Length: 354
Ligand code: PMP
Image (cartoon, rainbow, N blue to C red; front, top):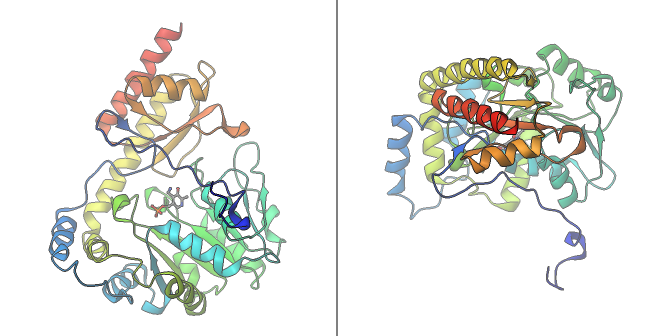
């Protein structure tokens, strides 16, 4: 840290992303990317757009917002796009939080929420998940503070139903409810439809997981037009060109190629259930996941040791050090052969532990 850094940022602890090794040595199951490449249509659209990189991107992002509006049954004015959904989350904490308006979210959830709060000087309270890692709705229903829930949650994969999201939105129309649906396409229920009835609800989505565009950095928020106008004010005040040309073209093409991505999601959900069954057969406790990852623990090996031993053998998973979940590893659902290798390598680790 330099002596010139603002007082405000001196104690900030940055978010720690999952490892991104730049060699091909690993079966990479640590950051919930899709194992499947973008569709041919997406590759062609992004390549064609590369020829126009001398020109700024369209700050209004109309073709992308129109395609999203059609996909989700809303209108252009209900959509704001960002450089990954992380950027939209940042906009949301900036727009609706300040020293007097703190946020609430679970103690075990996406690690960026507390970082964005600290960065923006927004206080927050973490509400403990229940012992089975489910959300206790009563923690949230009567609390007037804005809330963020990942649904399905990360790193657990556990999902709330639509009726529960509606209860949260309906219980206090003056309170903001943000639902982060990064993983919804793998088996969750989307709350986008509720944004037409509840003007205090923002749904955040991403192209990073189900649409195979993590490296393209493309996310979106869907909400009532007044909330979107707030987010657009923030976006235009930071970077109106936040979504680059190639990613916008890729996003439009991905929405057009919906059938390809839906088939991939079905395959991933099937692979998830097969992998969970095999882990349980090995004695693992596996949380019920609606996402493209599994959260699992075994009495035979600590979470940290399993992570390290798998890594040594070329399989990368994610381990978190928070005490409540230090026994677990989070494993992205990759291709069928990725998961075969993950299971076989886990068996090797167990056999050598004996
Ligand atoms: N929300 C959750 C719950 C996530 O796990 C992630 C991925 N790390 C994101 C949002 C951000 O995804 P992206 O910025 O790639 O859209």
